[in-house]
Every structure is written in C-alpha cells, then in structure tokens.
Image 1 (cartoon, rainbow, N blue to C red):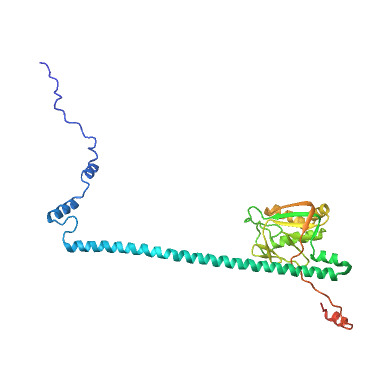
Image 2 (image 1 turned 135 degrees about the vertical axis):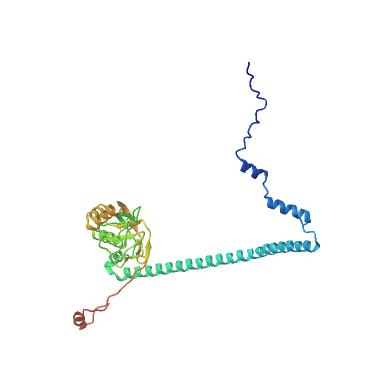
Amino acid sequence: MSQQSPDRSTSPPPRRPDASMSLLTNVMDHSLDDGYAEATARRKADGTEGMPRSMRAKLGLAAGLVLAALVVTVGAAQARIEAPVIAKEREELISRVEAETAAADQIEENVDKLRAEVGERQRKALEKHGGDQGGLVALLSGATAVQGPGVKLVVDDAKDSDEGGGGPRESTSFSDTGRLRDRDMQRVVNGLWSSGAEAVAINGQRLTSLSAIRAAGDAILVDNRPLVPPYTVLAVGPGERLSTRFQDSADGQYLRVLQESYGIRRSISVQDDVRLPAAPSLIVRTAEPLVAGAGQDAANTGKGTS
C-alpha cells in the first residue's frame, strides 16, 4: 500500500521576533500605569479634569499667576536698580586705589629727590674738605661715579631651587637649597674686594664700606633694598688680573662649589668699560682732635670723641 506524504498546509505560524522581549513590549504598549489610567478615567467621569471650572478656583489660579508675575517683576526691577549702585561703588573703589597709588608714587619720587640732594651735598662736602686726597676719599667712600676696566659676575639661583643637601653651607642656620643666600653674596663681594676691586655694585646699587648685605625671608637686601635675581655684580679694577685672582681665591672656590653642589648658576667675564653710579646716600662723619690732657683719659677708658 502506497504511503501518503504529510500535509504541510496546517503548519503553525512563524514565531514573532520580539516574542522573547515580552516585558519590554508590555512597557511600550502600556506606557501609562494602570493606576494613573483609572484616576484619569475617574476624573473624566466626575467632570473635574482640566482647568478649574468654578469661579472661585479660577480667581485663585489668576491670583497665583499675578503674584508670581509680580515677584518676578519686582526681582528684575530690584536687580536693575542695584546694578548701577554696585557699579558706582566699584568705580569709586578703583578711583580711591588709583589716587592712593598716585600719592604713594609721588611720595616715593619726593624721597628719591631728597635722597639725591642729600647725597650730592655730602659728596660736595667730601670733595671740599678732603684736601689733596678729596678725589681718593670720594672714590673710596662711593661718593662719586666711577668708570674703567673691570669684571662682570652674574650669579643666579638654580633652575630647581627646592633641592638641598650637604656642602659648604651645611653648618649654617638656614636651609640648604638652590637659592643664593645673603651670606653667599657677602662672600662674593668680599672676595672681589680682596682680589683688588676698587668699586663694586650689585644690580646697579653701589656698595660702600658701610653697606650691609642681609636677608629678609628669602630675599637679599643691600642697604635695606631688595634685590631680584639674577644678581649682576660689577667690579672696577684690573680686569684680567681681578678675574683670575677672584676665581683662584677661597671665595671664588666657594662659589664654584655652590655651583657643583646646588646648581647655582654663575658666569664671569672681563669688561673693558664698567660704569658704576655713585652711592645713593652716604653718612658723613667728622673727627675732632682730642683736647690736651684728655688723650690719657681716653687711652685709659678706651673711648674717644668722634
């Protein structure tokens, strides 16, 4: 008996591609929660959906809108009123700062003029009462500008001035870093004097026998005036010989060790023409001869008059 082929016309329908995403499909088909839908249908049935229908509710809504608009308007108006006041106060403050700055600059200018006048009178007094040695006295005291051959020494802090370590400054009371200190500058200047320098200036400021090199925090002061690195030291003297003597001296070796140990930068060069200004201010002292008979007393007490 022949076997019939199976009938394929009654095969089940193909499966939907999103059959495995039933939860996502349900969320997309029913985006509104059933509870919200029921509440909306109930309000529709009660007639309370949408804008308020009673006159009292409408008036309340209108009053709320008017109040909100009033608050926004008042805030904007107040901001517009306060803006010019704040701007005016700011301009007044800027004007006061500028006026005080101008006054301070004027006072500083007057001080510089008076200092220059005092220095000029002192220089004239030295030249007048110095006799045959007036020029030498003025030179040694820094009362006159000088010009001649010499050397130029530029010393600067290390590029990374936060590192420290041992070395020639190990026993000092300040921290060992790559920054040049007042004691270092003192040794540099003293080394130039002892090597034959006739006049010395640092960053254009003339040094005298009464000049003081000190420190205020990390700043170096010369006669109470701060210096800014790099420090340019100009010295008048026999150029080549002065440079050689300084580099071979103990102070020159000290500066070389600072360079090797802390990275402090230095450069020295011989100059054919070095110009140094006169000292900005000098203290003139006069000596009086001892009265006859007072010399023994002074010798015994170790005191004299000046």
